[in-house]
Length: 350
Image (tube, rainbow, N blue to C red; front, side):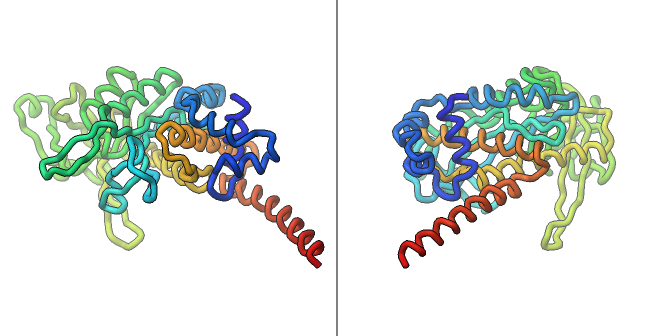
């Protein structure tokens, strides 16, 4: 890893606020100038390939036949930034509306209780168009489904993947066909309740389909056929309670016909590693703390933030402490040093 990249990712892991090049130069007492950091972020060298170069030896050490690949996307809100190809309006399902943000997809390899991001794809809306109401909008030349397939292909080629896990957004026939036929592995995905399935190959050929809500058993599995798939899949239904006491329903679909309902559910629960990854990068490695507004520096900063996450993940494994405990320890040392400095200033003032 380039020494500037190493310094910058370390800085993101310890920076308590906005990660500016000037502040980093002050922390390093001028050993690195702010112009060097600015040029690094503007160079375009910090990309998904640079991330893989960093994590490759880690993944090869951790890889196993039980390793799973989680593909998920996240939004990093940028409410005060100007609109650009990378900062634009995306739908946020947690808020039920569009928000100005950066949208990116991550491929996270989880093996032996360690989560390592191995690929990043940004949603770049670089095509301007006018909708039927005359309002100017943006769209991307490349669909998120294509980016999903690209991430799976790259990861499956680099390391053994037993299952690809994804939520309902990516549960489409093209993705399922790609994972099984092109990548030679299995998937477990969430499935929307409006999907129709055939109960047999004969029903599929005859065009007889039923709602998944009517045929998916709770706590059990059933073999069904999707309309555009050339192989059968398993489905199951889970009912769970939300924190407010209301009930929710999750439909799961898998290409591995050897699984039972409990196994399918247990494996799919590992998809939560993506949520842990996004939460830690936002809380611990300054994912949204860059003041840059141009496309390349923003992408570079986000990749650097993901690299800093990898460093915390390695420390977690070595010291048996989670990311938040590690940060608390770091900030504890910083607070002690700041306290001593404050006392010295007060003595001088007296």
